[in-house]
Amino acid sequence: MGVNILANNMLRGYARMIEKVSESHIDEVLNKLSLEGVYNQLPVEEICMVDYLSKVLSTLQKESCGKCTLCRISLRQMTAILKDAMEGRGRTDDMSTIKLLCEGLRLGTDCTFGKKTADFIEEIIDKNYLELEEHITKKGCRTMVCQEYTTIHILGNLCKGCGNCIDVCEVDAIAGKSGYIHIIDNEDCTKCGKCLEVCPNEAIIRAGIDKPRCPERLIRVGRFRTRRKG
Figure 1: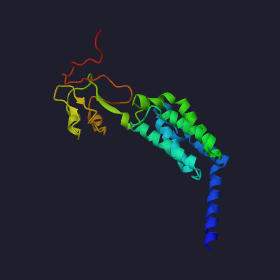
Figure 2 (figure 1 turned 90 degrees about the vertical axis):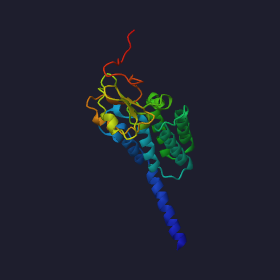
Figure 3 (figure 1 turned 60 degrees about the vertical axis):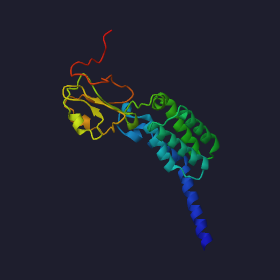
Figure 4 (figure 1 turned 180 degrees about the vertical axis):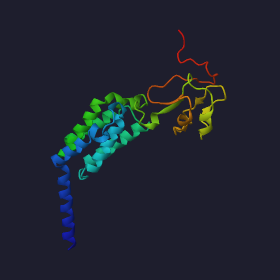
């Protein structure tokens, strides 16, 4: 009786695997993982490609039947690499490592899932290589989706020194006094965004790769220039 139950469970598992790796099912999954499928109507310029690739890998891990060790471990490793890239721990060879893992999937798996998955992931990397590399080499996210790379700044030409931002900052990351342009220490800043909400002059902004020029010391309001003459 126990043998029959085990055999039935094995057959059900095999049937599920066959269903998972069927070409029509894979095509359906990959179609849903297109930019339009994942982000609906969100403009492309607001989409972080590292975040997108991370979402793709997370879904592919769930869709994988899990029977093939190479497929299971490769997708897990790619996901870990992308997580590091989003959290400031990326390494210069990360993208080439993912491409090598894709090549291993393509050559080493017997099912269509592994081969089509490898092609899909590699196509995303090839089309968005520069943006993916920016997360690693420039430690920045142009869409500001990856919070680790986001910084908050007080614009010297707009700050009136009112002190509202200082009052709401719970970690004392903002220096300033009445009549002086305030300064945020991004080493201490938690990026909670409360200062942005209370600034009456819209002088506080989030920045991704491109950082604004701001005062490095306390300067009286009205005396800071964004560009130096000459």
